Structure formats: C-alpha cells, structure tokens
Length: 339
Image (cartoon, rainbow, N blue to C red; front, side, top):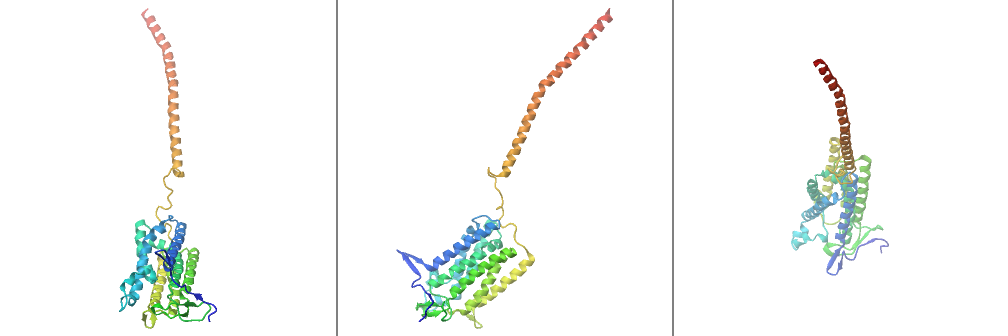
C-alpha cells in the first residue's frame, strides 16, 4: 500500500446544469489571464500603454490554440484518423492535446498581426510577455492532471501520481508526475527570465529567446521520462528532437542579436510617452499663459499710445503759441517799412 502519493481527480469535468465546467479549460484560461496581467505590467514598465498587451493577445491566443491543436493532431494523427477512430475527435480540444511548439509558432503569427496593426515591434512585445507565457504553461500543465494524461514511468516515490483511469490504454498504477515536473520547471523559467532581464537589460527579443531555450532544456529531460505513445526518430522521441532543434535556434538568435543590436529598445510603443493636448496639459497651460502675457503687453502698449496723444496735442498748441509772436513781429516790421 502506498502511504503517500498524488491522487488523480475522479473526473475532469463538473456540470453546472447542462453547462460543463472542464478543469483542462480552466487551467488554460487561468494561464492566459496570468500571462496577460504580468505582460501588461512589464510592458507599461518598458514605456508602453496599458491594455496594449491584451489587445495583441486577442490575436495571439486564438492563433496559439489553433497552432497547438494542429501540432498535436499532426504528430499524433493515428489517434484521430486510424481505423476505429473518429476524426471529429480532432476538434475536441477540451479533451486535451495541445502542442506547445505549434502554439508558440502560430501564436507568434497572431501576435505579429496585432503588433503590425499597432505599429509595435514584435520582439519588444515578446520580451514583455515571455515570463508570463512560462507561468501560463505552469498553470496549463495542471489540465493534464485533470485528464489523467502525460505521466511518466512507473515509480514508488512519495510524490508518485496515482492513475485510476483505464480508458485509452491506461494502466492504473503509480507513475512519475511529469505534469508537475514541467509545471515547476516553467515557474523556474519564468523567474529566470525576470531576473536576467533586470540584470542584463535584455531587448530585441532576447528575453523571449531565453525563455524558449530554458524551457527546451527542461522539456528534453521531462519528455524522456514520459511513457505515452509518441513517434521516435533514431530511438528518440520526436518532441525531444524538436526541443533540441528549437534550443539551438534560440541560442543562435541570442548570440547574433546581441552582436547586431545590443541593449534594448528605447521606445517600445510610438506615442505612448506623449502628454496629450488636454486642458490639463502643463505645456499647453504654459503656452496659454505666454499668450495672455503677450496680449496684455499689446494692450498696455496701445493704452500708452493713446495716453501719449493728448501730450502730443499739447506740444502742437505750444508750437502754435510760439509761432504767434513771430508772426506779430513780422507784421510790425512790414508796417514800419511802409512808413
């Protein structure tokens, strides 16, 4: 008798009347929420606008779900298209089956569309959401626990996972909880990216590449422990080969990007730092004050000009008075000349 183990849920779905509430779906939804929330905080800290991450996620998340499902169906096509199988099951995403490689690849396409519509560089947005994606995967892996899937080899360690279902070829027993291993690894990857980004000021997609590389390292050894059916190449599981290839690409990108574009982006979202043109804008208030001062000076000058006019008129009168004696003297001289 096992004295300690991780129990599996009796079922992965609860019904609220006719509405099914599936644990797998809840785990994915919670993961998406965490990724968007943390990504938004990091984006604003980098100088972006609040809400931009969520706006782009509207494009990235659906593309990612489709990509993840396509990768799973293509690499495990015999589960849906072999004899005795129903191809309609390929659309039942709630029953599990999302490939992270396809989710990231096609999700990046959706993110690129969203970034292009906003005039935002995709690498900067990817850096902001990178640790959030790792945490989202940590939550998402618990969906496998609800479905009693993707466990490892048989074991008797105290943290063994107790599988009770016998459907789809499962054999009840105690196995390595690879879903838990990957969940914990993803949490570590998320904190690694946050630390490295603060320490080295990663930019131009290097924080995202670090997340990819670190995840691949963990996925390789965790994948090696799994016992579910998978395609093998040279005796190695297909996902292990994928992890190796993606890891090398991520490392190469980090090296080349660091040489060609060191540092990080100074502006991640054009116009995000503008103060606007509202009435409360201190710049505009200053302009209004200057304009008022100029108008006042013009008014004062006009008043001074009007005030000077009587003085000029007085000068003219004095000039006339000065001219009268001269005219009298000239008249007297003419009279004397006549005499």
